[in-house]
Length: 169
Picture (tube, helix red, strand yellow):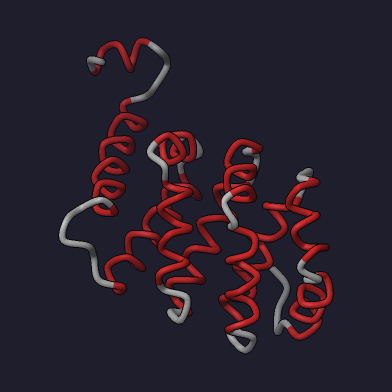
C-alpha cells in the first residue's frame, strides 16, 4: 500500500509515522538472537506507551500476534517482577474496548498468568495495580474471563490486593 493510499483512507501523517515506529518496535520481539530480559522489558513498556497514546496501535499489534508473544514472555520470565508488571500494563491497555483481544488473552491463558504474577509478587504495589487493571479489563463483559477468576478462586486474591493497596488506580 502506498503512502497516498493510506492517507486517502483517512489516516493522518501522524498515524503513518506512529505506524512505522510501531512496526520497528514489534519487529524487535522476533529478532534473532533473542532480546535480554531488560530489553524485553523496555520493548513491552514501549508497546504499552503505543497502546496508551495511539488507539489504532491495538489493532496493528493484534494483527501481528502481540498477544501470544506477550503471554509467551510472561511464561518464560515469571520471576521478573518489572517485566510482569509491564506485561500486565500492556494487557490492560490492549483489553480496553477490544473484545477480540480480550477473548484471545482469555483463551490463551492470559488471565491465569496475571493471577500467577499477583500471587508471586504480593508485596509489589506497582505490579499489583497493573495486574488489577488487567483483570478488570479482561473480565469486563467477558463471561469466559469471569469464569477463570471464579474457577481459580481468585476473587479473594483480588479483594485482598485492593484492600492492601496504598493507593487506588
